[in-house]
Amino acid sequence: ILNVEQSPQSLHVQEGDSTNFTCSFPSSNFYALHWYRWETAKSPEALFVMTLNGDEKKKGRISATLNTKEGYSYLYIKGSQPEDSATYLCALVSGFKTIFGAGTRLFVKA
Amino acid sequence: DTEVTQTPKHLVMGMTNKKSLKCEQHMGHRAMYWYKQKAKKPPELMFVYSYEKLSINESVPSRFSPECPNSSLLNLHLHALQPEDSALYLCASSQGMGGDEKLFFGSGTQLSVL
Image: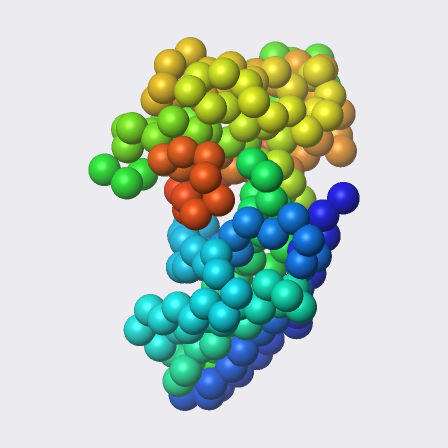
């Protein structure tokens, strides 16, 4: 059974703080790693799809890195804003299956 | 149109009822998925359809019956559910089943089984 672990489970930061969270996964059977952002009462939306060891992706103030050899990915948010408050899910693609972690719930206080 | 539409948004049903969840997308995606999520847990894969054929069934009990009548629609038929089946049911689609294909999600159906 493939296990995707995310930490921390939740995080409270002040507006303007930079923050990061971790996604850990088994390094064998890796095909791709996805990050999704899920705001309350909305649909999860894809942030990044990463496939190569050493991949770095950036979208505005949010960036992600990938280490497939050691089985982890980091998501960074620079200068957090209240609108960044959401659950951030990572998902491992292995074979034809996309396996999710439980997410990191981010609260950004103005 | 980059939306995946799920109906209903909320559903309450008894253990003897039969109901259906519906999912629709008009992006021309050929893969569609059902996930089940309980509070504070990861979304769990239930079924995957590729080109309207069931390609993955994650050992889901037969009281859940998926159907893909055409490339835009995905249904999940529910019968004789148990209270522990209460959860958020998410539908998703992707262009294909390659690992670099991101998933597009609906906003889910919150199901309560009494």
